[in-house]
Image (cartoon, rainbow, N blue to C red):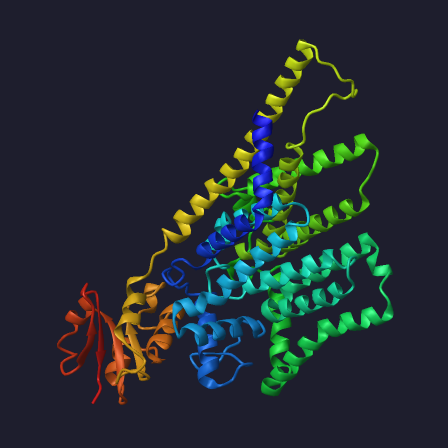
Length: 528
């Protein structure tokens, strides 16, 4: 009975797969976009990218990025990620939601693309992939799906390149699509895209597809790779010649990979395993175990049958390359940041989903006598019924375990990422204190609010500056209270209320432009 019920449930799922797929996509959409504008804007890559993109629009220069209207060589990445934020600003205005929109959309599209690819193995694998993307706590909480920087777009292009690589045997045009995605990944995240080239080259060697490529196909492939790169470089060259490319090589590539502890991000070789894949707080440790078990069982079955699935083995090697090349490559270099290993998570999701989907289908197969002899004795019928009940019980146990695993970590992700989303009192004050049409918008702006380094009181942190620019189109100037009092032009000053009361005598005649309900901050102005 349990076996029949399980088979019936699986048939129901197969029949209405597209309804389940749509529901899973809507759930992933919820995880991507819910409370997207609430979370604290990070002061490093996210705020920096936001300022760069905002000033691209203000300057009318979409190839050279600036920070506080000075040419910015701190983040030595090409332009696509900035264009994504520009698109978000165009669609949703100068808001935190606009800053993060393109990243959230890229993560959603990555999940959908991987899910549709997994459908070639089974419909169960397709839905499981979307569940894993929803349970993906680390990238959803930090520096990817819900953050306004380059990594989500990079991961989308990275993933599409590898998925196309797997289908080159089926259609040679996928080779050109793979080359184009590599090029876009490079124009998003620079040298990180080299991992795609290593994975693709090794896979084509293992599958021997590289030996079957014709000269014409090589030509179109190289065109798909280099045409976008040359277009971008030619445009950039018109601004500062070879300078930006030289900095990309010397700083973004060499300084971050050589022995020196550049920017203080040097960690042991095991950093990514210890903090991500081996950490029991995340789902990845379980998925690693599932993938290892799946690989061993598959090899055992093929060994017992004496039949080796060559194409299946080649694809398995592709998944291993997809995981281990970035994992080992970024573990070997000195500079280590959590988000460098995020591309490794996708093959982990795909491999675990494929194995579990195959297992769920296998368990739906009816049990039969191995010798094929029909018998109706009561003892044999009783034994068969017992085996079928055991088989059905195991099937339900595995299915329940899969659902529990996904839902458990989806719940953790929901509580951390969505329910746990919180703003910052000063950031919210800045957004509330000014409209872009206000009389005092567009002025010079000073700040006298503690930032991440209390010793730098009077200077603008990157996230403060970003919010000041998108909220009031302010031109931010360091100098604090002293600089504001010496300012000859109309200007504003953000200040803590307690500090304002302390310097009330010096600030006589200065207007209070805005004061919030919590009486924590004030916006002052020396406007005529």
